[in-house]
Structure formats: C-alpha cells, structure tokens
Length: 84
Image (cartoon, rainbow, N blue to C red; front, side, top):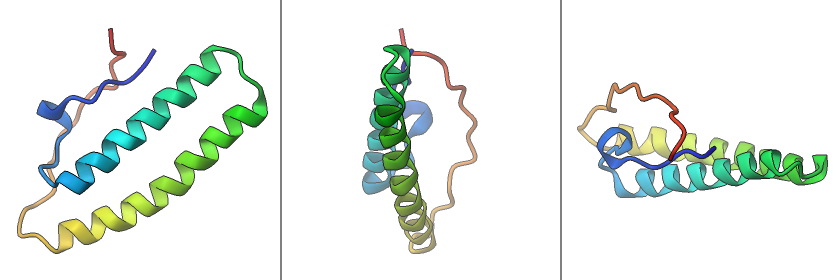
C-alpha cells in the first residue's frame, strides 16, 4: 500500500508547500513499506520520528506561507486511497 501524489487534488499551488507535501508522502510510504516488510521497532520508530519532526517544521512553514499570500488555503477533502 502506498499513497500517490495527485496534483489535481493535493496541490496548494505554492511550490515549496507542494514539495514538502510530496516529501511527507514519500516518507509516509517508506514507513508503510517498513511496516509491511515487518521491519523492527527501531526502523519503524525512526521513520515515525522523522515524520513527526518534519511535520512540525512543515506546518510552521505552511502557516507562514498562507499568511503571506492573499490566497486562501484550499478546502479540499481527498481520500487516502491506496495507489495501484
């Protein structure tokens, strides 16, 4: 199972934010793969730690990005549908 970046439904049209979202999805997919492969707690824990740290940094950046633009954040909902 993995999550695929879909610019039609996920893009914010702020290139830096979109790059960060793609990075988060890549690392989430790495974590999902590690879990599916039965990797140990240390590997899975390291993946969770990396995601948690980056999420904090990302949301701080994203908040400032939205406050510095006249655009409003998109109000989209998108399902986490497994990529084929």
